[in-house]
Amino acid sequence: MTMEWDKLDNSMQVLFDKLNTALKRFGYVAFISRRYDHLGKYTLCTPYKFSTRSPWFEDWFQTKFQNVKGHSLVNENACYNLYEFGRYCSHLDGDFAECGVYKGGTAYMLADVLMSLSLQSKSLHLFDTFSGMPSTADKDPSGHKQGEYGDITLEEVKAYLNPFPFIIFHPGFIPETFRGLEDNRYAFVHVDVDLYQSTKDSLSFFYDRMIKGGIILFDEYGKIGYERSERLAVDEFFQDKPEIPISLRTGQCFIIKL
Image (cartoon, rainbow, N blue to C red):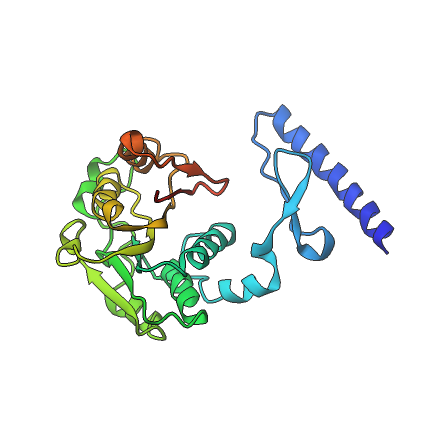
């Protein structure tokens, strides 16, 4: 049976290689990948000719991801990273926070971490306008516009996240919504605000309030179009800091507070 799987795997690999080669000849980047391999646990790691373990496609995580579909623009791989970083930080003192909530999908993931580990004593702080991008988006190099992602209300997000009583909502504009939280400490922060200034303001507030060993995860750092917005804000902020932003294949990056 193993040999049969290997033969099938090799045949599919040859097919994908040929398709990718053909695409490259016409100037296209090869995006063809597959989600099969032995019991669906491995996927092709393009442009390299090997497959890697992909736990975000395994049943246990797909079950969790079903709760997020339709409530987030973040894919399975990135959600898996978020979930595992949250679990990694769960033993640390301090609350969790997310800047840039949109429809609440990634917030649900983080809340699920705390709930599944019986850590409801921690708070999950959510910061968003809940009415779309602020006016500063119009001048941001990312190309976002004021009001973008405004197809959701605070009431709808609250209803979706109702199973988690330890969530605290902070509607409004960053950095004003940070006021009154200066004495809090944080173990994990997810920054998904896209814009240069909002990213810079988030870092200015949270960095000094992070627990040693805590993680800040950025969603858009390595994605095309954010070189002069989120990525620039992160790079500038950590230029004189001991932490080094570590890029991930998903476009995310993270730092571990030293």
